[in-house]
Length: 413
Image (cartoon, rainbow, N blue to C red; front, top):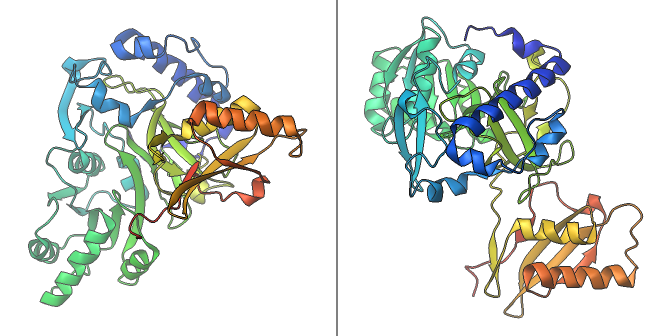
């Protein structure tokens, strides 16, 4: 891929047309060549005609991968095993894979947006062992003509000495570790003023850390990706949202479901990496929460923007010995034809108590006794538990992506 990429600034309508065509081609390939996908997608449509049709396809959850790979190291998800370059082993355990392409993980787009290119020396502090992060960023930097020092994590004093001695100009790694390295360099009296760029991922970039780094003259750019998907989104301007990669089809869905949320509403990030042949995932649910930033992006880029990482979507909890899943709360909504709901779990007089807050659709009457009875029956049917019911306005529910809000303090006596 050559940068700048004109696709980044195209008419959004043109992008949607290409995404639909690419998704249909991607799904057809996955069905034909990835054994698990053949069965997984058997009840899904042959093709889509709009992005709304994506909701008719099942999700594949990251939490499913470990069990899928117990009998087959590829989990039936790899289409062309002979074309793999690496197999990785992430906690879970989960096996991850890549191919032989120059920038197979597509992180070059994020590094290019950060201004990294020929003449830069990148100190890559992501791990090169077991997991793919180190290689992801190395390949991206090399494809842009930069030079890489493969530092890996740890060895803070040695990292500081290298940064000083080699006149490192760019950093790749988790946000907090860069601050730790620079503080160590300061304590040793080492000059690190050549460092002016940083691409960070793998952890939250707290505002105070960003400010501390920027006050040292370092431009800091966040990127978001996973070991399964590669790059999903990246910053091109600080604090303006993360722009979705041109080869990633991203959706935000209500946790526990595959249904799209309203614009700006927090939900789970779901990604299809379009055109990837070796490992053709379809509607991969990351388990991470985010929301769409509305309005035009910086520097003329027109793709969807995300607010960044906003927590985890897996909110499963246990109440009075019974597991409660977000999908069960969604089933209650569907059963009574409500708009959305939220379960609050708390302690009262030493006992677990659950309150269900429900937003009704237009035309439904919260004073309707039959609706209340049907709601109670749905709760007992899907949760096998009793709960209080409160019909509320949509404005009263926080926009935080939570379907289950567990407020119990397990450290309390």
